[in-house]
Structures are given as structure tokens and as C-alpha cells.
Image (cartoon, rainbow, N blue to C red; front, side, top):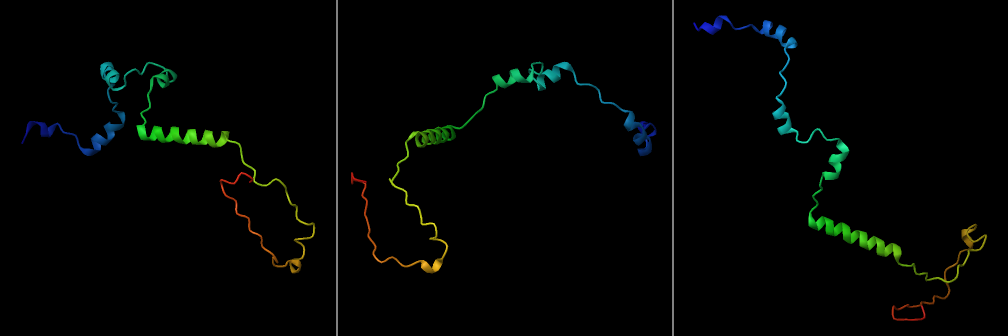
Length: 115
């Protein structure tokens, strides 16, 4: 029989002692090593923080912003110079609708100046 066997506590005794036990505090130098610069306020740490973004992601974001600025800045082209309003009772009776008797196609080319 070993000499330490007589000094060991039972599980019930350990369960009774456990709630009263408090863990010791960590040394100050250990806390400083784990949490460097913890004494500064959080708003000063925001300015010194850096954000690492991969170069392809940054290029894609810059390209999308340039494309959005270009689309927003270019004037819109209006292809119709007149507005034709429907008749007041055109949608009232579907039996009055007739097929188109004559269909006139107009081909508009990009080189055509008279658009």
C-alpha cells in the first residue's frame, strides 16, 4: 500500500469542495503576452488595424465601380420621339381587336445616321 492512498479524497468529498475552489489569477506578464496593447481604447485600435484584400478581388471591385460610374454618367438615348396613347375604349371590348392588315418592317442599322 502506498503512503498517498490514505490521503486521497473520495468523489463525494471532491464534489463538496469544488464549488468553493477559485482559480488563481494569471500573471501580468502572461496577460500582456496574450493580449498586447489591451490598455488602448477600442476606437484607437480601429485606425491602426489593416484589412488584407487579395489583388484580384480589389481589381474586380475597382472595375465594377468604374463600370457603374460610366453607366450612371452616360446620357440615355431615346429612340421614340413621339408617344402614341391608346384609345380610351381600346381595351374595353376584346371582340373589336383585328389582325394587322399590312406589316411594314423598318430595319435600323447602327451606321444609319437618320435613326
